[in-house]
Length: 194
Image 1 (tube, helix red, strand yellow):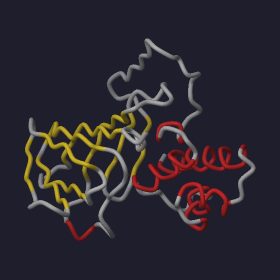
Image 2: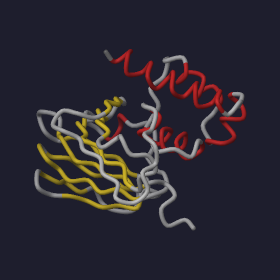
Image 3: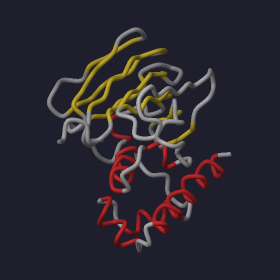
């Protein structure tokens, strides 16, 4: 099943790049993600990090959710999107299992995720996660530890939350015996950049 999810992203990314008649090198210049990484994603050989998804979406001027499905027509004012229990686009990384919620709308200012936190140690991460925008996380089940580059680590249990500037390096791990579950909301990368 994971291969099928990966192939949706792989096919969509290739189609988006080809629709723009971009080479991998041109796509790399637009997104800030290396041509070799883009090639591996397009061929289903690599699951991109959330940071790379943000960069790719910004470079293609899309929402992250639009990398997984063709967007509905822009609806102007009075927009609405629903996600019923268990619905959403699955996206798995080595650290988190994200389910993108309310994916029917394009050009959203917020990206909501239902996320299972799999990472268990700070050392599992290769680098800090950092990108433009802001993030809000509300712990639904279990307990997490938030690491940021400018603050002491913080433990948060079910019912607690954090809000951060995403440009600051950050990592989240589960401290629970079972994977922690959180509601994760990221603002679109270009909010406030006018």
